[in-house]
Length: 123
Image 1 (cartoon, rainbow, N blue to C red):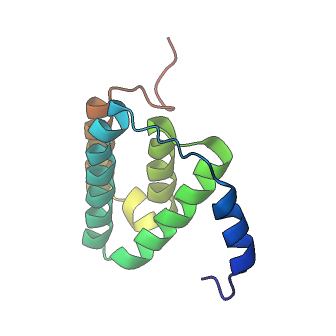
Image 2: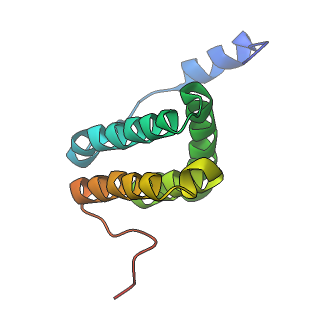
């Protein structure tokens, strides 16, 4: 949370902006729903395992921000985030049924965004 905003600095930046450019290509718009669906399915899986959905959401957001800053945004990095989160929770990663459901979440995401994962064999 921001406790103090330097309004003079903000005003200086806003006044210096001449143009805004938005890159809203169709792939982002078309694929965004698959990111949302995978994330919600992951939260539901965590809730079924007895984890607090809000806590998992906060952890997911923190990791996502870190990964995006360090590696960029994209489907492969998103799968990296999902896998990292899954491995962090022993009650998920040690349960065969949860492993199967998690693999299904990742598989459905991959099929929709048409990618190969970081974890598949390189051809």
